[in-house]
Image (cartoon, rainbow, N blue to C red; front, side, top):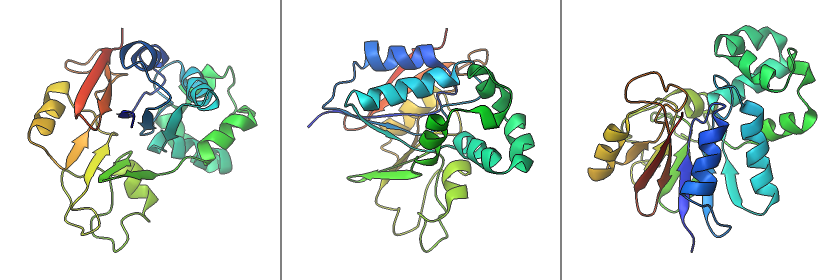
Length: 222
């Protein structure tokens, strides 16, 4: 069996994403790579990030891209122009500019198809992968899309979640903090190390968690 990786919150930072996948972890076709959403917005190369993901899929790599809140905002704005202000408030225009356009309706259909096919969570063995978190109070915590892309929790009591290890992104944490949680064998592990926030102390890294070994691998966003 190959390795199991998770990467989250790329946010248009194509160069560190490409470097991490091709030169650092050296992804192989026997590996599984789960991407936890937020591929777009904020950074300048959202289109390049999506093109790279699609290219990896076409080449036969085992890639599972999940949806983040930024992908959901894009789709909601594409379907309802009244939702555009919320997306633009969250740097949606940077994504349009990466496509060389200013109107969301001009995004090529193949990319809309990519965004609409994204799943919201993935189960692999005893691990649960999600962009943000789950509704701990719901009878079915896997039915609440809003919680899965917007709300994070440090722990869960729901019987359907309690015995799982949850890997998520959405809220940036320092590498030191994440490694501390890994060392404590925490049941909830965040892996967003704030790649697009390279000007903030402690952030500016894109990280991959090799899940089976619980090894965090990070590259800086120069």
